Length: 118
Image (cartoon, rainbow, N blue to C red):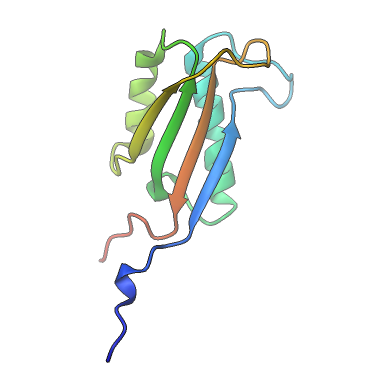
């Protein structure tokens, strides 16, 4: 009997605590868009170090205290994830402990998640 390996779940990479802090200055950009962009840059860098990219992201979790300005992030998210449309969760949370922090992001990625056969 032949084993069906296509039903086995792929190992996931879970990137947590992605924030929009500027690593060089230690400050957060004042607007949500800048923080989301910076957090996603950090996330893409971490994915790349594992041989993955945005196409491997299967879920995005945004943690926000206030959703004001979140709609300004849609073009950025569409540019980065528009082809793969990962599941997205928006969690409203208590204010962050770090002054100036507006968002926290988690990414779940699976190797081969959105590979297409040529």
